[in-house]
Picture 1 (tube, rainbow, N blue to C red):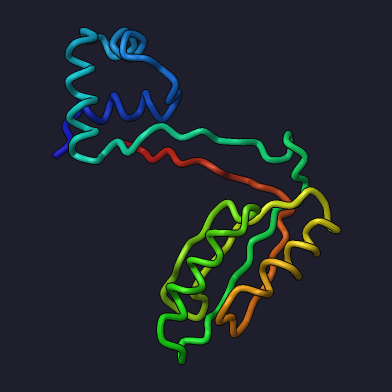
Picture 2: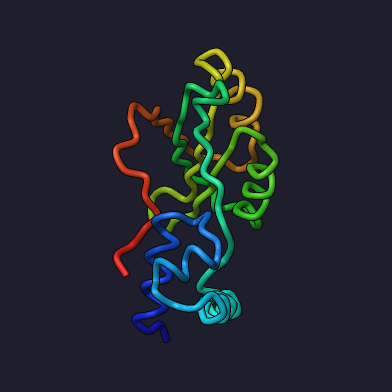
Length: 151
């Protein structure tokens, strides 16, 4: 169970995940040894799963971001597993989410431009197995992209 100290450390890490133990200790008003023990326990308890690098894909030349909502043909045994295994192999797919409901899977992908997107869509996405329906939503703007939660 998390206590107030754990929550304080998690809030600090959400603000700046690159902080080291000395910086966290100073900001939290604790000793580095105590912070290190707490962080170790949060990792052991799988509250902290690792550090994450957030990439600005547009800075790397990927100007197009698309969300694909996919419904699978569920009459085929193992359709879900086969689709997910194949989707993982598409380099431009940066996120895969599965759902309960009308839509089964959402793929987030990036492309350099619309021509590149068309190539990825035709050559990679449409060849994925067991697709019954697909809807493409092009990202116009990201209004909020924050993994931080109020702790």
